[in-house]
Each structure stands twice: as C-alpha cells, then as structure tokens.
Image (tube, rainbow, N blue to C red; front, side):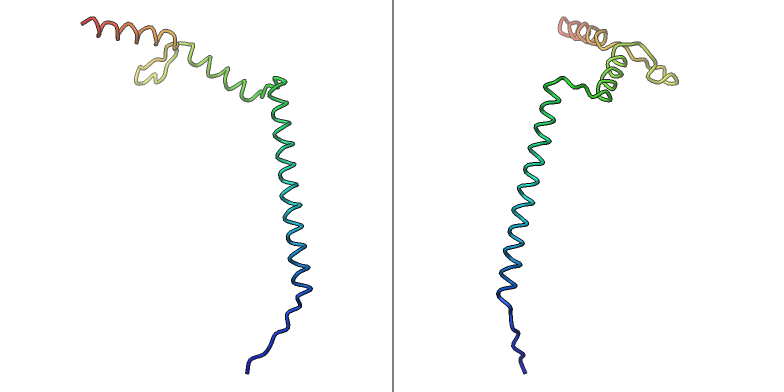
Length: 99
C-alpha cells in the first residue's frame, strides 16, 4: 500500500526564501570584503608601503649577482658579477661572429 505524504508548502517556501536571502547576504558580504581588501592593498601600494621581507630578499639577490664567490668549491666553479658575465658573453659572441 502506498502512503501519501503531506508536504507542508508553507514551510518549504519559507525555507527556500530564507536560503535565498542568506545566499544574497553572503554574496554581498564577500563582495564588500573583497572590495575593502582590494582598496586597502591599493592604498598600501600607492603609499609606497614596503614589505620588508620582499625588500630583504631583493637586497640579498642583488648582492649575490654582484659579487665574486664560489658556486661549488669542490668542483672549482665560481660565480662572477652579472655585469662582468654579460661583458664576457658579449666578447665571446662577437669573436664567434668575426670568425
């Protein structure tokens, strides 16, 4: 025998409407939060706010590419400043072209 189930339409519509309202509120809240964070980030960039970790990393990188040193002492390979490496590469290339 098949039982007939009573569906309470009023509760179903209420739950649906509340769900839609909550979804819209959450969407608008996330959008407002995103815009706020975007605005704060833009202001920080325009104000020249320096991220010290990034500045320190860039300084370390600049020091590494502008000094002489050992890349691997056991293999006897060295590092040279980038400007010198560019000069040597250009000289070698110009010698190849002349030959």
